[in-house]
Length: 145
Image (tube, rainbow, N blue to C red; front, side, top):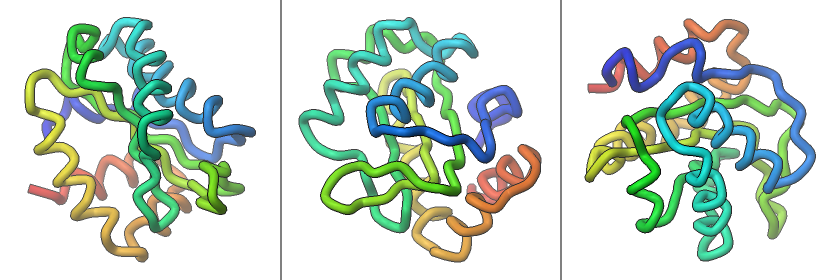
């Protein structure tokens, strides 16, 4: 994963988020604040969640925008937020690792496959949730090629 897609500025550890909407707004806010997306992308992330949950299992959710949101993506990037206490994404699905994605064109497909490789191992997800430094998070994702 290239260096400008995931930087220290895109990672927040040990956050407390009360609701699914708050969690999605938070990861989207990082993408917006770091210059990857226009503010309108956050609303598209919430619309996407209404269509179908971005909960992936293993305590992981990958919020991202709808197809219509592509025009609000300025640059491909991801945000990573750990929520050790968890956030309820509905139906008893608790999320402790949030990965927000914004992809130009079809770049998000490549990123999703890399994230899937890392997050398919429960042990990796646990390491990410328990990470004490942003470098640890970057290291886990940088090992994926």
